[in-house]
Image 1 (cartoon, helix red, strand yellow):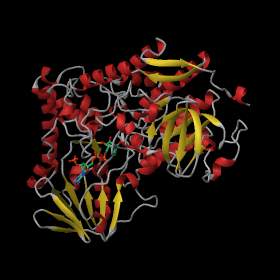
Image 2 (cartoon, helix red, strand yellow):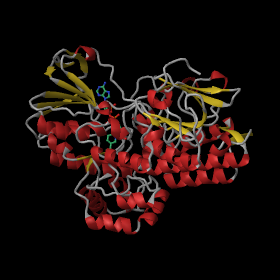
Image 3 (cartoon, helix red, strand yellow):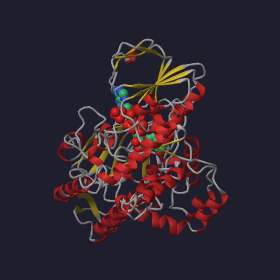
Image 4 (spheres, protein in one colour):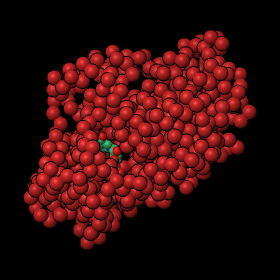
Length: 563
Ligand code: N01
């Protein structure tokens, strides 16, 4: 055991009566976002000893960190919530159709309290190394607070969009004002009153933040590299009848959502866009535009696969942008043209395009005039313009899907670093495990539907699958489970094949790793659909975990055996 100073709160004995600094735990979970919280709850249900490490001071993961103005979920509140507890889903009341970050964070805290989860979570503790001990067949988990803990299982619940990306813009450190990243927003909030704000980036975060910042700031300069498609959210207070309707039938609705392509229950038009007359197509797009939200992309069944069909949806949105933005030159600059709609994550906004009609908002197209440097007083572009700023907001995104996993310093069999194994891109079996890393589970890992789905649905599915797997191992005295190379190769090939049947790989998106210089271009999430994917996972488990190698060992220690 480490001689270093252990995490102070961890010194108390755990509920199994063991000193957690010296005991071998059944499981370590990394991250206390929605995945980590539910994983802890389920593993406790098996009466396993579990420790969660969380870098933040509180629970909530992405909703803990992303506190930028306007941060809001684009999955409806009635669906972006846990389904595992009937009481929880009935008692919790959402105030808006799409919940804002503060309310979602309150919900995460409510769940942590309601299920008494905090006592097994070590906050402000970052995992720095996760090493497989070949002899003991245990993971050794080390933290930046000196913990060094042995655990039979390690579950990475680190989130897909948690490693914030700072851009490599020369001079950034020399800026004399304040710099903020949307993914690490100050907890006390930021008052932009009277300030000139430069926003770099126009992805989902920026598109939500810009209208709110523009209401407050003296001036906002938006630096846009790639224009984005965005659909109005039409957010509104929660309608009591709508809530009651959902709650009257919650279980059936949740079950149905799990069979849907993206884990969201909405009305998918089964027709192809080119199979209907132009007038009907226009009506369909119009009604969805007026209804708001990502269901716009369900206007026709083939928008993700047929270029001509996709083009009709893209053109409809471009026409809306032209009609909203008064200055034709600004409208033109805001039109996304060089990738199919939906192949970069579709954005959902409240008055984003309208914001460019304000006198205090300027758009800078950095494709035409690239950013050359940040200076002490602002941002300089290639045409020699100095855009003065008091604050810079970096809405520059994340090292998505693999960033947080690779930062955790994971080493598997024979000391193989995950970073080396994934040098040419992530390789997993089902996005749940990776060969050479026994008993290490990934929640919504690359190779699973994850970011292409309602994350709550995918999180619950993975956590339930892992829980069942651990219970299966315990019942049969299995020591380790590990993906085989063959199963992994076949899954990677299948996931690729499915991805390349769609238009998605045509865009330079973070799905492809294209936002990070030098990152391998691999389509990372599984696009085969949440329902299909769930069936595959269940089928594999039913066949005795086909494609996994299960090795015998002493029966998993239950609390009874350990005490
Ligand atoms: O990040 P992004 P995000 N110079 O990567 C630009 C989820 N999310 O934080 O496209 C200039 O999408 C970059 O330009 P380009 C959601 O899944 C959900 O906004 O690379 N610009 C892009 O415009 C989302 O997709 C919600 O050319 C630079 C922007 O920065 C994901 O999180 C809300 C640059 C980054 O956009 C990530 O969204 C928010 C540079 N050097 C987020 N570097 C909802 O639920 C980068 N850019 C609604």
